[in-house]
Each structure stands twice: as structure tokens, then as C-alpha cells.
Image (cartoon, rainbow, N blue to C red; front, side, top):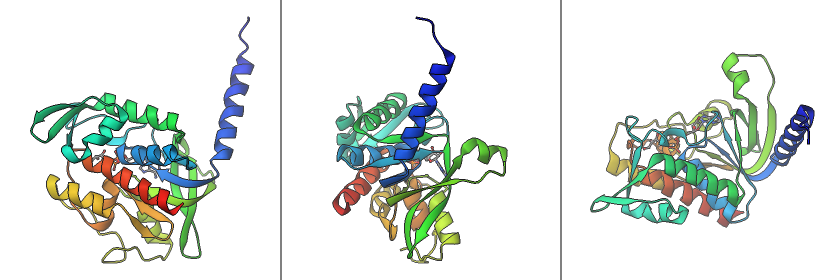
Length: 257
Ligand code: 48F
């Protein structure tokens, strides 16, 4: 059979367009494809919820590929090991309570299982704004990352979701937009973003799970973003808190939906 380039093009355009149209009205929209967002998306999809994830970059995985200082190993504490077990990611015990996993195996396996569970991932799409109605976050405003990077004057499109999850890591991008533009008070001490604190792995890992929660109606945070919003420390290349925080927000949303 001769291959027809036009058939290949048509297949991709038709299939992607369908996928994007189906993503315009869903239960949960997650922003950011790092470890917390991917884990959150996995549990929601596994529970049968309609969930999509938008990632600015070409590759999914955020800061997990590089382990610590590009040494591609991650450390996970005992409390989070069962999440790696759930994904069938191999771990070795380094010292009592410290488990090591290969960061490439971790990202690729979480991503693969999340997609197979039904999470729809859109890479190369950036969230540049939110849709707010009645003081509630109701959706996202999206544009191609290429448009953003090139600084082109091209208008975005909008999607609707019952809940939005900010999993954008250190910059807490969606929370910042809400604080700046919506007039909604966030559920923090100041009513705005508290900002992340300097490195303290133990406290950071504890507070990140506490802080992964609803910040205003329709809007949740998980992962490093949660500590950036509520003022907890960063924690470096220990990843248990990221996984647990994604799981926690997914479970809360599953209860609500
Ligand atoms: O930073 P990231 O990996 O977030 P995380 O899940 O994990 C943090 C750890 O990697 C590490 C750490 C461990 O102790 O602190 O930093 O909290 O992934 C965030 C993803 O969000 C994407 C960004 O490209 C990255 O892949 N992102 C950020 N802003 C946007 C976005 C945006 N406006 N639209 C779409 N994607």
C-alpha cells in the first residue's frame, strides 16, 4: 500500500481536534504536568472522572526528570512508597526510611499509567488566564506555548471545568493570575500568595500535603505550588510530598464530584 501524506495529516488533525473539543467541558482541569499534577490526574481518571491536563512544555514530567542537580535519581520517604508501588515503579531502600527510584522510570511510568487510566494530556498548551463566574473559578484560558514564546498577538481559547487544579510548581502561575485579576480572596493568611520559603525538607514535605487543598471556590493547589501559595518551604529532590499531595487533591475532588 502506498502511503499518502495527506491521509497522515488528516488523521492527526481530525483526531487531535476531536480530543481538544472533548476537553472543552470536563470535571477537572489540571495545569502542569509535573509529578503532583500527573498523580492527581491519574487518580481522578482511575475513578472515572473526566480530567484533562495542560502542560506548557513539549515534555511531561516537570522537575522530576533531573532528580537532584541532574543526577537522575529521586528519593521518596516511607509514607509515599505505596504510591510508587501502585504505579509499579521499582524502589530500593538506601537507609531506613529513604527509598530511591530512577527518575526516568518514575516520570515515564506515571505518565504512561495516567494516560492509560484516561487522563487526557495536552502538551505545548499554556494557561494564560482563568474563567471566573460568581466568584468561582470555572475554567481556563489557553494558548499555544509557541505563541507565548514568540510573543505573537493571537487570542486564546477557553475551556470549562467544574474544578481547576494548579500544579504549576514553584511559580504558582494560576494562583497568581487569580490573585491579581479576579478580586477573589484566597484562603491564605493574607488573602493573596504567601510565597515559598527556603529549603527545609522535613517541614516542606509535611506542609505540602496540608497545603494541598481548596484555595477559593472551584480552585485547588497541589505540589510545590501549594507551598508557594500558603507559605511553606521548598524541599529539594525528595518527591514523596509531591505524590501524596496529588493523591490528596484527587481524593478530595472525587468526593466532591
Ligand atoms: O515544577 P513541577 O515539576 O511541579 P510539581 O509537581 O513538582 C515539583 C518538583 O518537580 C520539584 C520539587 C521537588 O521537591 O520542588 O520542583 O509541584 O511541574 C510543573 C509543570 O507545570 C508547567 C511547567 O512547564 C512544569 O512542567 N507549567 C507551569 N506553568 C504553566 C505550566 C502554565 N501556565 N501552563 C501550562 N503548564
